[in-house]
Image (cartoon, rainbow, N blue to C red):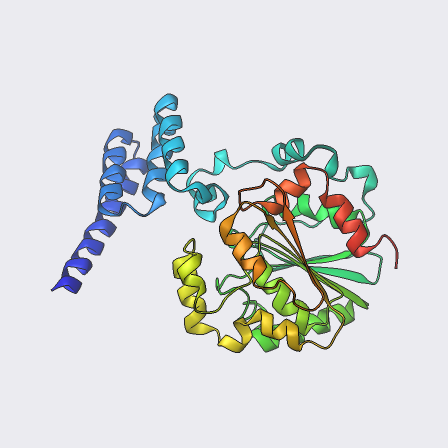
Length: 340
């Protein structure tokens, strides 16, 4: 009986959503707003309806109400601002590359510092290559929002300044890259495809780097590719069953990992301990961020692993924090070198 009730509730929500969308498209904003608010009552854990209501308020030129509604939504779902959902619901409120550059100041390499063209990100491909003149490449594993906090062309400036080849990767399967990159195949096929790509590019030294959920991909692939450096920012690297009891931020994501990814592949500590190469792992995270501190501690004392807690930082944005403080550019120069 409960299942039937849930099904009825889902069908009612779907019908209401279609009606709300039709009303919004037809310009009946008051009616659309009422429907989106009703959807928020039916499904109060989904931020989509709150963001849709904000969009309609802005279309109605009720800016003060829209601002208050957006503040309330961000208080309830603080991480939604960096999500794909936010960009789709309120695209005109997403920070532009220029705004990010202004926030980061002199840390972002200017045009005069670039030694190659930066990547373009117009088609949302899951593999994007920026070819440099050196024999060094950095594989960049984006997070669940398919970005590096900042737009990819802006982030690529840090690598273009060093004339490094960048290969940006996206995980459309949302399984921490453990089942591969869609356009390249499953995990083993993706490893093989990346090796071929690196060989074709004449790369002899590889580094991996990941932000947030991309950090687990950076560690896993970095080990299997024999990377020189692995760098993770706010990376969830403790992925065994007990993590769900401590890190409840992405419960559904964790459940899918446990279901679809074998434990030996998820056990990054065991894989690092068994690794015979000279791969070094650096993890940067907020010292006052309990979940990120827990994940980093899972690798404490492991071979060739160094932890870098960011003093006083209580949030999840270690990457952006380092850029804002002027330390990201220096980190990349020190980790990747400036010549081969």
